[in-house]
Image (cartoon, rainbow, N blue to C red; front, side, top):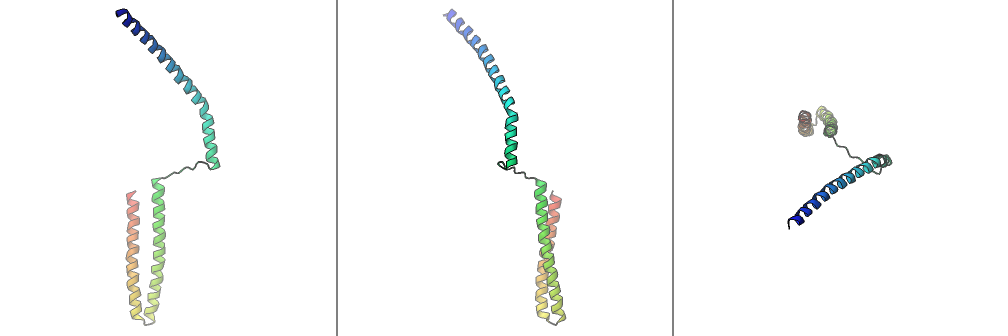
Length: 130
């Protein structure tokens, strides 16, 4: 029984060394084929990007912050011009002795002015956060 075990161990060690060399050579051949094929795959990917087949999506925290800030500034501009026109209307109503209507419009203007100030605080907090 001992010679059989020795023959089996010798066979397995020879086979293991041989398998190791075969596996190593296979991986070297695969690496060579991938390396040679890499420039063509890069070229095909770049060609697809140029043709518009592949769309890249890039998101940046900085660009998101800037877009959010621009949106808030646009809202502030709208509210500012609306409040200015309401103040002009209030002044004209007050001059023409429509005091009750002028008072109602003034209260609406003050409420909208509070919204505008709150929006400016949000813009400042957004700038400080990033």
